[in-house]
Length: 67
Image 1: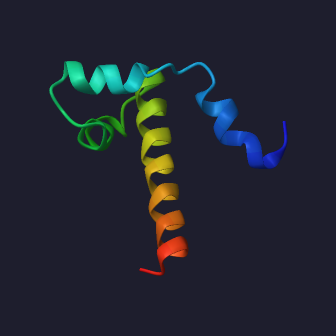
Image 2 (image 1 turned 180 degrees about the vertical axis):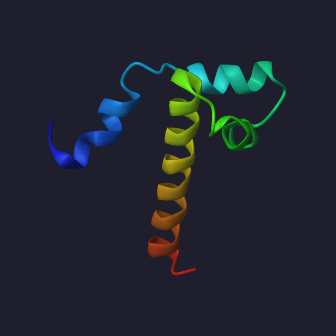
Image 3 (image 1 turned 60 degrees about the horizontal axis):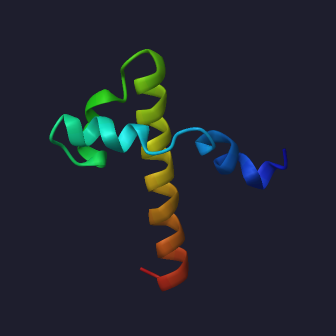
């Protein structure tokens, strides 16, 4: 897999599982990710990935809009 396609590989089989967990807990995805980022197992990995992807979005917006 090409280096630029790591996001596609990391999210290929997720199908909204983490978002569903957050909604079930009655939280936003970001709140739930911050709560679960230290957890072991699949949920912890999903939380850390979600936070990483949210950070990428923030950096891309800064670069695009110069904020």
